[in-house]
Length: 234
Image (tube, rainbow, N blue to C red; front, side):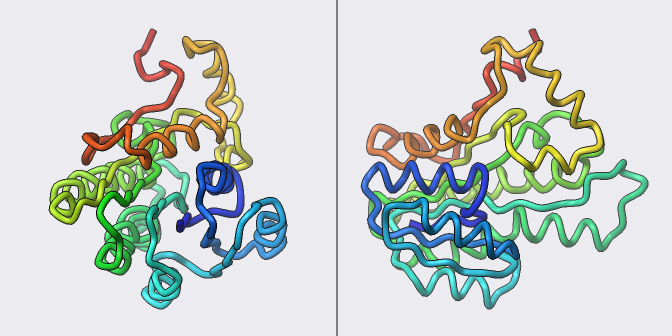
């Protein structure tokens, strides 16, 4: 299996869960934190291949695909500029959209031809794809595009027996929250979450595990929301 952004946080939790489900080889993409990548490789009880680089770069996608064929591809890697809309630039737009949305299509083009019937591609999205969140215009837009790509791939790849879906998390308790200027408000959102706690990386990993299982054979092109009921607005 392949997990982009697979050496920390949600990605690492997904990789561990898929290995627990039976994957014997984990190919983990990461951008620059070599120490975290090395630590992740030690934690995972399977053969681990680390691929360093930006997933929006064609050479990196080619390198990731070269370690297949895969039964599971998870596009978890995400980046983006967290700023009000009028403070963003076209360069910010290109960086965020390319890494978060276009990369999924690139990975599908590179990996899907060698994936067997019954394989799965899963993308990790967020509530900003549908809701307006503070300073989130670029990432939210990229996640909306990501979910649209999931729908199209979900239909087109069904003919090859490959399922394509997404998991959308609420506020997830990871180090990524440090990059948000409104981190304290996000953490306080637990007060209006029916489940009574923040989403944990293992919650997202469990949803990915389900979508990759035969129990999800008839789930195609869908986005599964895992947010403890936060988006219901109660």
